[in-house]
Length: 94
Image 1 (tube, rainbow, N blue to C red):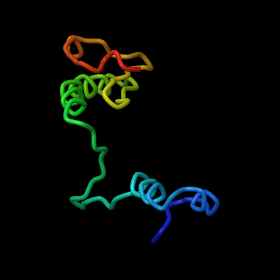
Image 2 (image 1 turned 60 degrees about the vertical axis):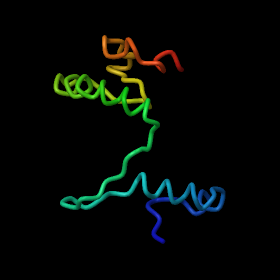
Image 3 (image 1 turned 120 degrees about the vertical axis):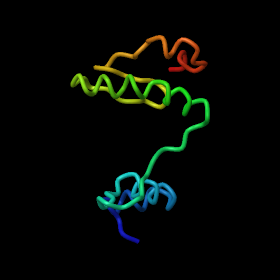
């Protein structure tokens, strides 16, 4: 098994499962392949992210720093609280 930058002492302290997950998350896939690596969230979180995705893309087009933190959308370090988040059951979770 190849290690992608995992130091030997870290490999010894982590379980094999954590090491494999670390390798998969930091693996670089070759362009032109039909493979991808993504997080596996519950259906509720996927629904929230799906609603917020257009807002994320628009913010990035405007050259703003925008990213998801599980189901929350952060734009320039501030939590986005637009109309898309009004009915989201998990928006109050820290």
